[in-house]
Every structure is written in C-alpha cells, then in structure tokens.
Length: 338
View 1 (cartoon, one colour):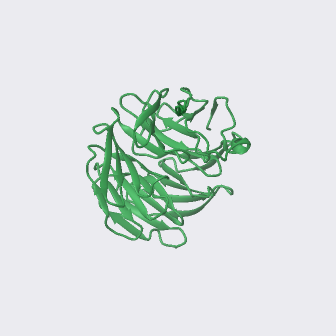
View 2 (cartoon, rainbow, N blue to C red):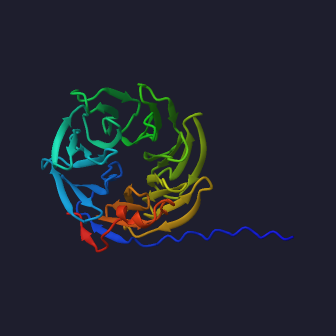
View 3 (cartoon, helix red, strand yellow):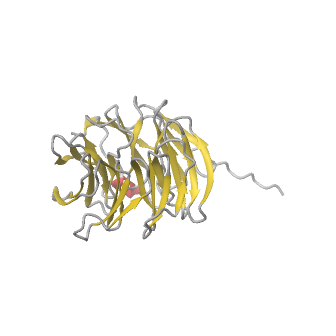
C-alpha cells in the first residue's frame, strides 16, 4: 500500500500594487504622529493639517468632520470600538471626542502640556500619549479631564495600544523604551529596553494572549516579540530599515510592517517563522501611517508623499463568502480625501 503525499498548499498571491490611491494633501511627514484610523463601521479618519476628514469605504463619500484653529494641527485620531465616536489629539495638547453621526464635538479634555500624538481606546477609557512624556487615562463618563497619569517615559510617547482583553496598555517612546502597564497600575509591570531607537510601532496579537510585537526606528530597525504573561523576550528580526507601524491580521497568523529609511516598503510576514510573504513598494517617502479594514483583508498606508494607498494583503475568514463584499473597499478610481 502506498500513501499519497500530502498536497502542498500553494503560496497565496498578494497583489504587488495598490488597488486604490487617495490623494491626501497636507498629510504630515512626522514619524511621531498617528493620523489614520479605520473604524469598525468602515469609515477612514485622516488628519490633514488643521482638519479631520472621514472617508466612507463603501460610498467614497468624504466628510469634513472638524477644523482646528489656524495655529493648531491634528496629531492623532482613534476610533472607539463601535466606530461611533472619534478621538482627536491636537498639537496644543487638547484631546477632543467627536460624535461622527452628528459631526459634533462632545468633549474637550486638557492635561497635556504639549502635543498629543497617540491615542488608544479601552471601552470607556481613552488613553493619550504626549510629547510632555505623560500618558493620561481618561474615563469619558467622568467630568474630569483625566482619571490617572502614567509617568515613566523620558521622552515623547509616540505609540499606545491596549491589549484585546483591555487589561494591558503597551506604550512606546522616543526614549527607545517599551513599557507595559496593567489597567490599574501607576508603574509599568514590564520595561523593555532592547530597542536602540524610538518605539512607535506596537501591536498585540489577536491569536495569542499576551503576545506583543514592537518595532524600532532608524537606528534600530528591529521587530521584537514579547510574552507579557511571563515577561520574557521571544525573538528579534532585523528588517533593515526604520519600523514605522505594525498590525496583526485577525484572519491568519500574519503581521504586516511598514517602513521608512531607506526603502519605504511594506512587508507581510508569517508568524512565528517570520518568513516574508511579500514586500510592497510604491510610496516615495517613509510609510508612517497604517490601518486595517474591519473585515481584516485590506490595509491602508499613508506617507508624507501625501497619498493613501489601499492594498489587499490578507485572506478573508472561511465564513466570509458572498457577503464579504459588504465590508470591502468599494470604489477603485483615484480620488482625493478632501
């Protein structure tokens, strides 16, 4: 009796070109800002200069949500999990909350002494990181500007991400430090000092509890993985260029990274082998901004070349068949975000 050899799975084909490009005038070429986020209701928020614009992925409708004072600018945007409210961090250090259905500002919160370049939601809590080196946790049900302040970074806080169970907050700074805080601590429960440059890129795995990825800037170039349950480093990959963003696929165990100096590339990796599935190029400046669609199949990247580019990189989940297009990016022509 002979046994049939197992069928080798054909490698997945990933298109090497974006299927859509949006012009994004005044999209800043600033590594420390976080100006793009994609909501669960399939709306892209983009900070352009003093304004925040909303772009519906299904209708291509563009809405101007707000315009700050002429001497201010948008430094960060972040959607709530339901996609009904948008947090906006400003250069003046103010953090605003907007009801997007009504295009109405519902809260303005102070507390930072400098720009708020990164935001992260945890249920009713909005965390903000600033150039003043502080992280402020804000319970939006409370009238107070913030409920507690987390101090530890020695330079600008440029990355913030809550874990999927809302129990741990990872923060990265221009001091080359990666900290992990629990939901009720005032001191980091984990301090990671291995990076040799600013840590903006942070991503929690949706597949494994406590698995955290972080990426370092120009002098570091590495993606590092950590087990925050056992507080141990796992592996390190030298990517060869500045790591600007990381995001995990929720559909498969893969992670995408975007890069700056010197190749301005986008790389899709298989985890845990960290074999490269593809490298995507097209941006002419460093790829500073990254968000993923609610169906987990499409990423959007933004750069100081003032473009947003949409790429199909991840497969859908098996349950997504004929209805998968409902969450897909619908329009294909090149248009402007404003």
